[in-house]
Amino acid sequence: MPQDQKKILLVEDDKFLSEMYTTKLTDSGFEVEVSSDGQDALTKVKEQKPDLILLDVVLPKMDGFEFLQLLKKDDSTKDILVIILTNLGQKEEVEKGLKLGANDYIIKAHFTPTEVVAKVKKLLNK
Image (cartoon, rainbow, N blue to C red):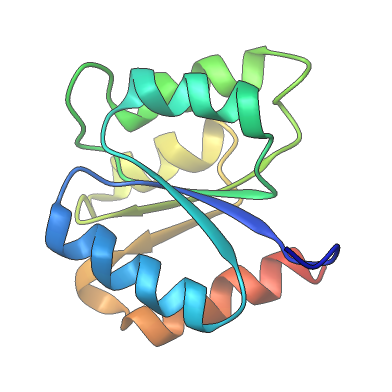
């Protein structure tokens, strides 16, 4: 892997969506690791130190908000960029995600995978 290739952890339990986003991100030059639940994702974060996490909220074992809380409490992982990528679009949910430390909140139904990749790139290039 090239030294400048960014590592993305995609936390998504829907197989179709995770494959679609993985393909889009890989085609854009990212290294992608996928996790289908919050507990597994927490383990992978500690092992692999991704540059950015795309995080669904509705997940088995541990939801995205709980995952985000634990991630941000840990000094070794608190600075990892997080984009919540979910279909939960209520104002309260968006506010909660951002308050817990997410860098961005994307409602899946409102953005194409291409637009999601563009947001990832923009955040990583800041």
